[in-house]
Length: 502
Image 1 (cartoon, one colour):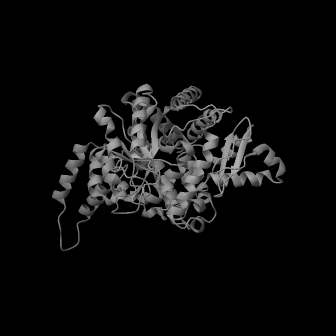
Image 2 (cartoon, rainbow, N blue to C red):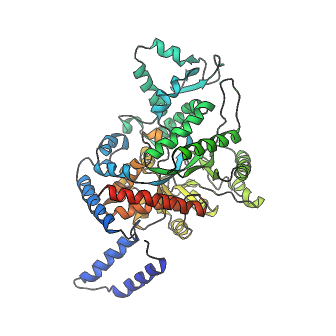
Image 3 (spheres, rainbow, N blue to C red):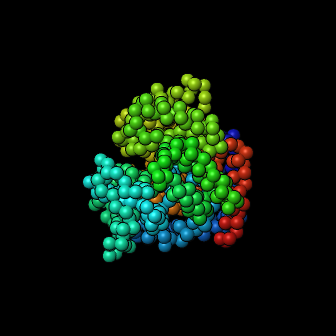
């Protein structure tokens, strides 16, 4: 259980009264009190562990100490190089078994592994491919040879192309490279944020033709929920632009069709997997749009939330903060719901930048001014004491995505991640994976490992993991009664996890 706020305040006041400055040897009792009080402030610091949990916590600490003394230390190494090391880790294997609650920050275009897209979807009939002038690919399902367009002059039927290639496995691996950021030399291939973001956005565009084919989209959603469920995740909030999907004959479906499809697939998945709570969508638009276009998107989102109240959670703006419009630039559009007298929850990406002091850096404060429900990434939050204080008082959680922050070159050694400060202070926080397919992950276990071992360090314990998992339900967009249901479902899984690993 958590110590109440009043109890915490009383302890703090007593501490200030008790501790005295001395010119001589500090009182060991005072030192012990200080250390216990500081530990109580960290994420999970006020979680009381049962006897069984304490036993598992001691075992987990021993495992972590062994890993932190070994070299190379995975969180200090680029994830693409650290992944094989993490997979061998006893801590990671334990985290894979742990019920992690909810994934609250994943983008729809990167929900499912690139390997599945290539080895399953591209083998389906009538799939065409085009190689573009800028060394990327496009895919399209069509009854007939697609017409040339500005970026694709020559479309080839994949089935025919594979038949001519002597090594289809190598060819498929090359296609996977177009849909992910993975490389054996990440530092050499991605020398700057500009370079890695260019490849990042190309991968999204390349995958779009596969994912938005209507029959694929149904399978894609189901497969995505399956991958999350396999990693012991029970709920999803998916950021999606609701791109128009298409049929083989060229028929285009609107956003309503996409939402209905998502709703139907989720209903089927929860029927097939009763221990999965469900999924909702945060409608997202790109920061490269104009104010007028964002206004129109917000009007659409308001209507869609009215029509699908159980599916649409709210609204966000996505894309690279350093090159897109700031939240303040879109203030006229973002003020629209209040002017219309309606509620549209915001879940803003903010502070995904290391450009301290710039206009972009102010997105953190502006997100709070626009009453954001959560803060996506919040990498810059530790540099904004007022924003940090406001978000804490308003109980606005940060969606921490450590692997994304490292791969997109905000931080190289995760021990230096600003979230270490937030975790030490017990700031509201959840763990998520952002774009798992692009980074070669699935679910949340890899990101939990990086946060627990790298960012949290030795101070992070089983209480930390427990609070982070509970937070994912607490800070979700679910109504109160479903949060209670989710908490009860999670607790049952947690108790089984503890007993199974003693």
